[in-house]
Image 1: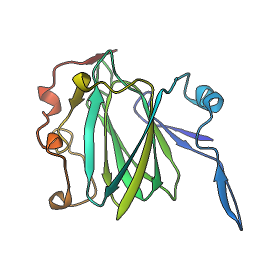
Image 2: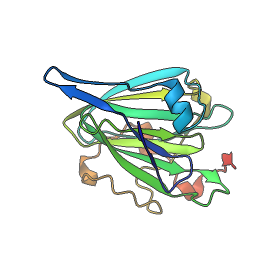
Image 3: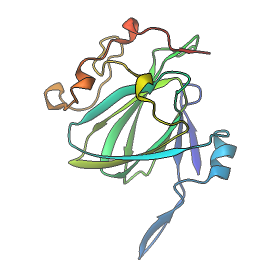
Length: 184
C-alpha cells in the first residue's frame, strides 16, 4: 500500500495495491499487519456503512473522550469530498483541516486519528461510504462543528444551496464556540 502523509500529524491517506485484469480487479482493503506497519497499531471494533445521494453533507462529527474514535474511511461506490478538522488543543495544526477526494475509482482511504472532527459531502449521484472505528459509538459523547464555519472556510465543492443536511447538522456550533475537548 502507498502511504501519503498529510501536513497534519497523524492524518494519513492510504492507496491500496490494485490488481486488474480482464476479469476485473482485486485489492486488499485492510490488513491489520500492514496498517500497523504503515500507520501504527489501531484496534478497530466497529464497521459502519451509509448510503447517500448528491449534496448530502454529513458532519463535521466527533466523539468526546473517553469515547473518542479513530476512523479509517473509504468509498465503495461514488465520490465524496472527505474532510478532517484537527481539534487537538496544543497541536500546531489545531483548527486546520485536510480535504481529500475519496472515490470508487481512486480507492483511497483516509485514516483519521482521535481528536478530529470528520465529515463528507457527496459529489456523485449516489455514494456508499464505509468506515472502521476504534471505539464504540456513544450517543452522550457526540460533538460536532458547524459545516459552514466561516473560520474554517471549507470549500465543499458544491453550491451551498445544494447541500442536504440532517436537522441535527443544521445547529452545530462554530469551532471558536466549542469547549476544549481534546488535548495533546
